[in-house]
Image (cartoon, rainbow, N blue to C red; front, side, top):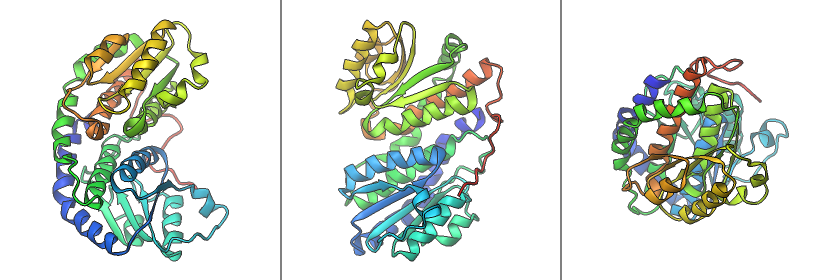
Length: 340
């Protein structure tokens, strides 16, 4: 897992280089079809990436985006009107049976289908109209790391291409990812404080909300920590009641639109004497938290998801090791999960 985390800057750079023209060509074609709906279908870490894609695509393109419920297709055999829809399947292996069945059904219902995968010879590539590939090489660890960030990057590229060239500066992401890897020694020392953690809450909002889901998933599958995830807004609407002294709250707080709500929540958590660990580029926020991983302040909100998840990946991998667990082989899990 640590090896694959370290491979991310090179994988991201290669993906930009290899897929840029294909994504641009795809966007030109989709504009000619007058797409008015985008549907994303995924499971697991890929579903968390799709949640990020939903925020980014809606904000940048103005096209409504829905996260598909695969069981509508796989269990209930519903026939939907996708005549002006783009349906995007997201799967690191390209072999998720339910994801592929949704893509196949959507194609029959009039959709233009796109697959985002790491495996160029997968079943998904064979059945979609167009495939966008991550170029990180085979991922061996059960816990997805480089494929998650590869999926986020392809959503960056697609959103840029569909938004009439609005400047997103995603070319800077590989460098930001490389700098985030420099936090490894700091995080290794930090995890010793959390060796006996059994429960926690992970908080994020807006463009980084998906990372709250992804960090929580990594803690559950590699460290066996029960990790709930909330937006900073939703957390104040009830879940705050579970917080008591020293309860661990892990938070993402990039600069931007959501920062003010994070400050409000942090102030309340300080009153409750919670244990707060914040990944942030804002020094004021870092000062309000029990502990902080301080990121480069120049990373703007829209480019934060990839560099900000890397410290979380490192935290989960090294916490598992500190607990005496093997993050590469979580109990009861396999790399490809087949569900219908």
